[in-house]
Image 1 (cartoon, helix red, strand yellow):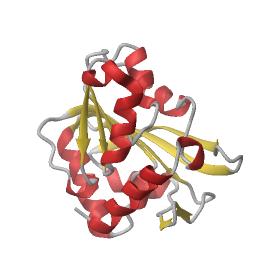
Image 2 (cartoon, rainbow, N blue to C red):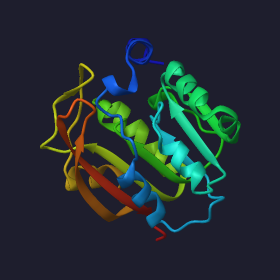
Image 3 (cartoon, rainbow, N blue to C red):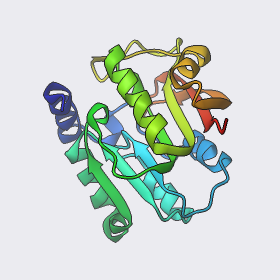
Length: 205
């Protein structure tokens, strides 16, 4: 595990409330729309990569999804989410791991990632991520990253910006682009960040 990266995110979640970090959303509407667009049964396994203490898991549980995994490098982030959910947290599989070193023990129908992938800036980590998707995603992939109009840094860390073409090239030919959307995310401190969301389906050929 990248110890510096883990230390950074543990400190963030230890010292900052949801209203003090830029990625907080009251309702992750775009993520939900993309997940629902795959039109899968509520029993389909879904993983939220870099989910932290996002409210996506709450919304998925409320919609009746029964097989949800949340992965994050920060144990403190996951503990905050578990505390918020209370008894409902028992219905979720929580994994504390650096995504670049994640070793799945199962496959997932849907892989969702909002604002984690763009923190991987080395070719080796990006390739490791794409191999995870190729080997462990059965149906669909949703990635939300900073676009070329987005910030160059987040939480003090360098990020990689993407456009539709550059993001698609990473996951081709195993996955085919089927949906894109650009979104201005308003942060809790009333600034705006430009995101690109891309939805991909597994190539059956």
